[in-house]
Length: 592
Ligand code: LR7
Ligand code: MN
Image (cartoon, rainbow, N blue to C red; front, side, top):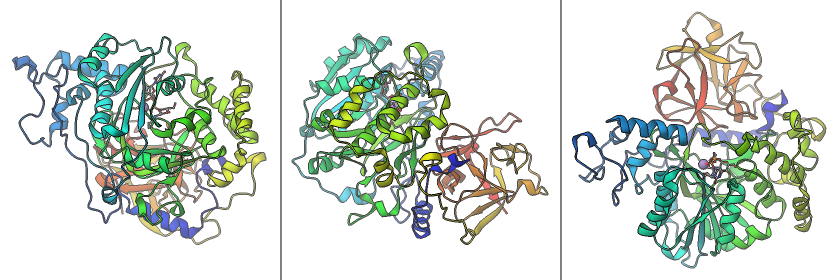
């Protein structure tokens, strides 16, 4: 039961919380910031047809041949729908194979081509900022394995299109022994014929995984600063300068941009809320709200703020510092865990990790990882074990309590990493928790004082609304699958029954959704892919904090996603959390 409470602890006063909730309430995930700033919503596609996308033949069945998508002027509002349109079997094939191989809509990705404009999602105050002309030069490292050609090239071109050449030392593409044909000769030809000499391709002879892959990329780099990007990103306007400036000031500062969302289904680029990185004791990364005390300063909400962890894929770091701080753990394989490892290491060994709200980079968020690891190993578990044993001291017990089956699992030799920790004279994990992530709840033998929750013994939160929670696509109502008093029970969509008290939800000023005056709608902190369920109200926000927003969405603060009805036609009525896309299955209405 204690697992639920790990997100926000006792250190916030209720005053802080009121402020925090005020900010959240006023925050619109798709705006440029706060409500008083003119809201800029989703923008229609504006393909940027400087180059013709490969293979795109609209009306190809009518024999019009290749032509840029939007060479006749204004982008049409319905262009996104048009971009996904299937005209023939070949289109269908591109779409289906794309989903299988990449878990996103490759048909749209291909048709977008390699250049497009994206909405400028920065807060308007960012646009007034100026940066020194004498910034360090960046080497961009992009590691890829079986990436969709168009997504990879759009990543590269977005960097070339939106980075001042004097700040760009090089772009290092590290092919992690991909199998896809077009990533072989075709890619080399494309680079040779279309790109500047600054773009270099390194081929791994064996599949190394993204962790060793990035180290290989970094070893070829010659710039002052390393910037890592995933191979399906698009950088936004003025993305690099705000990242380089804090590093120039202090070479031990590591920085992340705000990661905007590129929808895997529509490729629509939209703004992300400003949040910071945390983790749970399952050693999964998660997003947390930014404590008010960390936001602001003289620059207001555009100043870089501290983040306990990074998501992993997108960050900038002084190259020398990357090397002296111990690069990555080369014993980690394929995917997972390296982001927490480097985050802990940065903080514990004398550096700091900041998120820079004025730097924005989009990333395609897929619903599943489209590739496995050779041998099918759970590399996330292997890598997490290594980091727990090297960095977490007695707190590794918290992880092993969540994953008891891993206690006796082999994790290889960690002596080099332990020696590194000693050599760098790094602080304890307890220091990290106390000073960098005090919100983290600790239970069992490592617990300090029993957690005191903000609402316990204080006045009950005011009720804002009461009624049925109706899914607007089906006009059916959210209710407990079993009995509403059953802790851990799932919620499903059922026929509405207006006389049934067990379908009554209350929504209060703490943003809790309470069913039948009993339990709170809750998201698991340890397994964020699990569906929401009913849990004892803990009054500390996060996993039980829900916000009604634009397009009738029901947004979950700690997972950063929206509640969605899974299968409209099924009578089972299961719900899940999904990336917010405004679709009817994600529209909810709480009526009186
Ligand atoms: O074997 C591999 N070899 C590779 O070169 C596996 C992957 N890769 C490449 C891959 O092509 C991609 O460019 O490595 C990059 C990252 O892999 P993804 O895109 O499959 O990872 P992800 O976006 O699902 O996962 C996030 O967590 C990872 C943990 O290991 C990495 O740190 C990813 O970089 C990271 N991505 C982000 O932080 C983007 C924002 C996501 C969020 C929140
Ligand atoms: Mn990724």
